[in-house]
Structures are given as C-alpha cells and as structure tokens.
Length: 387
Ligand SMILES: NC(=O)c1ccc[n+]([C@@H]2O[C@H](COP(=O)([O-])OP(=O)(O)OC[C@H]3O[C@@H](n4cnc5c(N)ncnc54)[C@H](OP(=O)(O)O)[C@@H]3O)[C@@H](O)[C@H]2O)c1
Image (cartoon, rainbow, N blue to C red; front, side):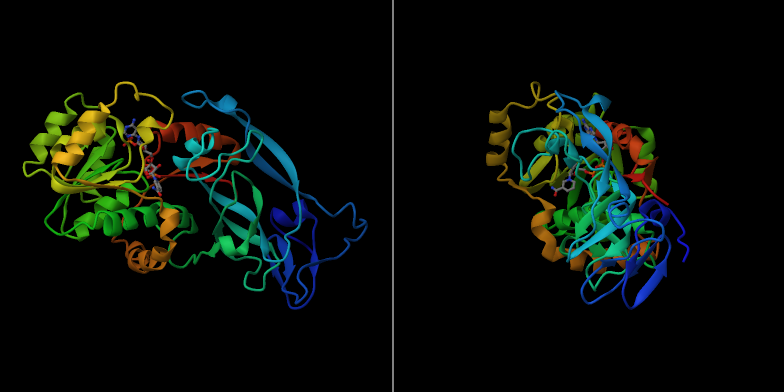
C-alpha cells in the first residue's frame, strides 16, 4: 500500500481495522476499539511509534513592551497518537489574533498565559489524519485549538467540522469563525444596534470590524469606520459599505469625527482604545452603548501614559448615561449557531465580503504576528502552514 502526501511518509504510521479509508496522506480506521497501529514492513513498532515531527513556535521569552522576533523560537517535537476522543490534525491554516499578545504576558487575564517554552496558542484549520473518535474521519476538515503548530492532537469536543462547500476552509478562522462570531455578538447582543442609529467601528477593516460594518449597514444603521491609512479607508467605504471612514493617524481625528457625526454617536464598537476612543467618547449620545471588544492600542502598554484621564472618562459615562459592556466571545458559544446560519449563506452568495492577508509558512508566523499588532494585515491575518 502506498501513501501519498505529507503526512503518510512523514508519519510512517498506519492504522488498521475496519472499515478503512484511504486518503491523502494517511490510512485511518474507524475501529470500535479505536485506532490500532500496525507494524510497518521492515520497521519495528518502537521505531515507528512516534514519527510525526510537529514543528511548533514556542514562546522563548516574555516581551517587555512591544514584542520582537526574539520572543519566539521554532522547535520540533515528536507527536503522540490521539487518545480516545482525540484527533490528530495536520494544520493547513493558522489564525493570528490580537489576543495572543496578552497570552505572552505573565499577568492573569480571562485566559491563562502561555508558559515560557510553551507552544503559542492559536486556532487552526486542518485535515484530520488520524482519528480516535467515530464522528471524525481522516480527510475531515476541522477547526480547533492547534496552537502555532504544523500538527496537533486536539480533543474532538473542542473542534468543529468545516464544510468546504460553503466557503474556503480558511474562513472558519475569520468571517465564519471566531472573529465573525465576535462581530455578530457584539453588534446584535451587546450593542443591540437599531436601524437609523449611528455606529462607530474601530479597526474597521480588520477581521472583526469588516463584518461589523457590513452587518450594521444591512440593519439600516449609519456606519462610521475608523482605520489606518487611505487604502483601508477607501476599501471600508467602497467594499464594506461604511458611510464614511476616518484615518486614526490623522492628528485632527476628533474634529473629523465631529464633522461626520452631526447627530452624535449611538453605538461604539470598540476594538482599539487609544486615540480613537478619546475621539469617540465625547461624541456619544445620551444612553449610548459601547461594546468593549478589544483595545489593541494598549496591548503592549504603549500610549497608556497619555491616555484620557480616568476621571474625565468616568464623568462622560455618568453624564451621558452610557452603557459600557465588555464581552468575550467564548462566553457566547450558544450564539455560534444563529451567527453561522445568518452569515454563512451571505458569505457563500458573495453578499458579505472578506479579505485575508496570508503569511507563507509556520516559520513566518512571528513576523506576521508583529505586523498584525501594527496594522500590517489587511483583513484576517492567516498563516498558510500546509497545502
Ligand atoms: N472580546 C472578544 O471576544 C474578541 C474576539 C476577537 C477579537 N477581539 C478584539 O477585537 C479587536 C480586533 O481584532 P481582529 O482580530 O479583528 O484584528 P484586526 O482588526 O484584523 O487586526 C488588528 C488591527 O488593529 C489595528 N490597530 C493596531 N494598532 C492600533 C492602534 N494603535 N490604533 C488603532 N488601531 C490599531 C490595525 O488596523 P489599522 O491598520 O486599521 O490601524 C490592525 O490591523 C482586537 O482588539 C481584538 O483583541 C476581541
């Protein structure tokens, strides 16, 4: 029996049992007792036992301020077989997200930090190459917590199958994945945006913001985007349907925002903090709502010193009677289904637009991540790990 593709020869693993399926790169059995390994001709079992060499990017050291390439290291590790309720995935696409900056720090957040020497956290889309769960078969595309890794063992209760007929599988990390879900929850459930209202969206062309703007337009809201640079602002208006988009690097941002929001701002979809928040807060209408989704401008501690004084901010919240609500999408998993049912068909039909910025190869993930923190991405930042 010949194996094709990366995983087979690289893996040197065969699994026996009935029924069997031959797929690109691996032979996997859905056996009632789970996966069973068969000795390869000419090799003894011990030699062939752990032969997948996973490449991982690990956290080499904690950053002080803005991270650098020195904070990351590429390592190779032998990967074990999947236990019951687990699958072995060959990563195709890796998602890079701003939250990863927080995981590099030791400080406690809503999630545990990555240990120094540990693999950087991430969601990835991959192909199952070995399964120890009857519901998953070799060749299935899944999205799960792969980490910054070429291969990963993932618990099946933490992964979801991806249908390549709806959209390219990479979208399960962007417009049809966690960022899209975040956009949908933030606009519908946190802001409860209504037709006729004005919403300001920061990081307006990013993975989250690009969907917020389009959904806001579809709900009859007036959408004002804030993004970095002329090209992103033009794309926001021409492709994403924002009514207007302002450059956050413009020193006159506050004045420009005032000019384009003559009736004030009802909803602010907050992704960045920093100067953008300072410009938006004074424009908030009475009983306005703010969805605090992210504050990327402050993730590495820059600009915190010259931020708006807390008493002034607090007073604005009081006198405008604002409702400010932070949220983390992982607490809204019950809304994943409704989100996918609404947005999936719109992506499939081409009514919802999305962009992806792709870095080639796992080894280039650190550089792409540093770029993301400074606006180097245009749309969802991905890494193509496999083909
Ligand atoms: N609460 C949750 O559950 C949740 C879930 C997902 C994401 N988030 C948050 O949502 C935000 C957007 O995430 P995303 O995945 O969609 O990222 P993204 O917008 O695709 O990429 C990050 C963007 O942030 C902008 N940015 C960076 N530094 C900035 C600064 N100093 N001032 C203004 N803008 C800056 C850059 O865009 P420009 O070039 O336009 O400046 C950059 O492209 C992040 O804060 C993230 O942490 C929260």
